[in-house]
Amino acid sequence: MDLSSLNSIAQSMVAPNKGILAADESTPTIGKRFATIDTESTESNRQIYRNLLFTSPNVSEYISGVILFDETIRQSTNDGTPFAEHLTSLGIVPGIKVDKGVKGIPFCDGETVTEGLDGLDERLDEYYELGARFAKWRAVISISDDLPSKNCIRLNAHALARYAALCQQAQIVPIVEPEVLMDGNHSAEECFNKTSEVIKKCFDELNKHKVDPSGIILKPNMILPGSGSKKEINTKTIAELTLKCLKMSVPSEVPGIAFLSGGQSEFDAAKNLNSINLINDTNFIMTYSYGRALQQSALKFWAKNIQNVKGTQEVFNQRAKMCSLASRGKWSEDLEKI
Image (cartoon, rainbow, N blue to C red; front, side, top):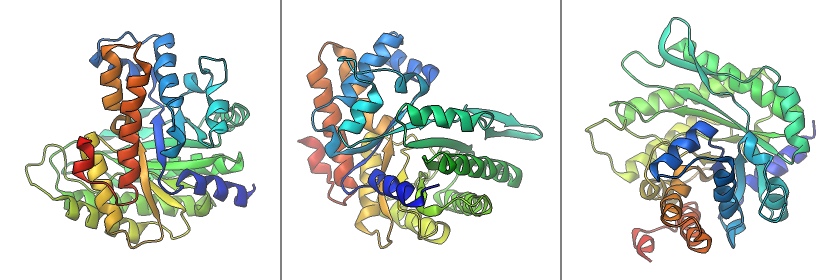
C-alpha cells in the first residue's frame, strides 16, 4: 500500500474551489429521477445525460472528482472515450460506488446495514483497471425515539471499515459515508448527538482495521433538524453544530470533508456549506459531494429539450459555480439571481 499516493489522491479530491459530483445513481434511482421529468430511463438516455455533465465546458474548474455507477464507468463520451479516461484527462478523479444497497437488520425493526463486501476485493481490482481511483460506500442511519440502536451503528461502522481497508489495499481512496438521514421530526440537537456517536464509532472501527485516516475522505451529513421538524433553525446554528460535531469526532489526519446534501434543496445546500466555511476554524477542507444539489436544475432544464445540450451545461455549470463559491465562504443569495 502506497500511503503517499493515497494521500495525494485524497488531497486532489478536496482541492480548493472544487467538490465532488455524485453521479452514481443506481439504475432504479435515476429511473425515478427521469420519471419526474417524463423521460424514459434507457441506457442510451442515461449515457446522453451523463455525457453532457462530464463534457460541460470548464467543468474541471468546479469539480475535482466524479462518483460513477457500474454502468457509467463502462460507458464512453460521444467520441468514444471512456468516461473515466475523459475525466482523468481533465484532472478530475474518477470514482466508483461499490456498495450493493441496504438490507434490514434482523431484530432491529426499521434499521438497515449496507451490503457489498462479498467479492469486493476482486471488484476493486477491476474498477482500478477501468480507471477508478476512489470509491464510495454509504451507510444509512435513521433517527427516531428508539433509533439508531447500538447494534445498527456497530454493524454499519464495521462494514464501512472493512470496505475502507479493502480500498486502501487496492490503492483506491475510500469515501466513508455514514449518512444520518433527515427523515423524521427530530431536532438538530438529536441529529448532533447521533451523528457524533456514529462518526466516532466509524473512526474507532477504521482504526481497528488499520485504515490510514490520511488516505480517506469523510462524507457526512450536516447537522440539521428532521425534515418533519417544526422547530426553525438558522444557517449559522447549523454551521456551528456541524463544526462542533466534526471537531470532536474526526481525526486531524483526515485530508478533507465532503458533505452530502441529504435532501436539502440546491439553495440550502449551498447556503449551509457557505455558512460552515465562513466560520471554519479547523484544518479540514470543507467542500461538497452533491448529487441532486448539483444536478436538479440541470435535469429539469434538460427535460424541456434533450437536444439543448449547451443550455443544460450552462445551468449545470452555474450550479457547480455556486457550490464552489460556498466551499470558500464566498457565496451569497444575490449571486443566485445572476
